[in-house]
Length: 87
Image (cartoon, rainbow, N blue to C red; front, side, top):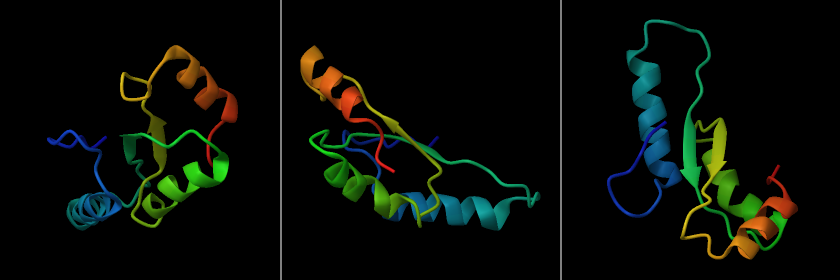
């Protein structure tokens, strides 16, 4: 699970660099997962999908939605959960 050193979440380009490096240096051809903690708008599924979609071709296999102070109030967190995951 790559973690950026900056406040912002890692962009798809950096995920692609990481997955390319891993693939180049692995000694196994078994599948592997790449997880990322991120933040979607949480307004509707289309907007959320637009955030997550560029990460898929970069090699990301798991998106972990951030539920922290950046998300906002407990009501905003509850609404984001209600909307469900982008697919």
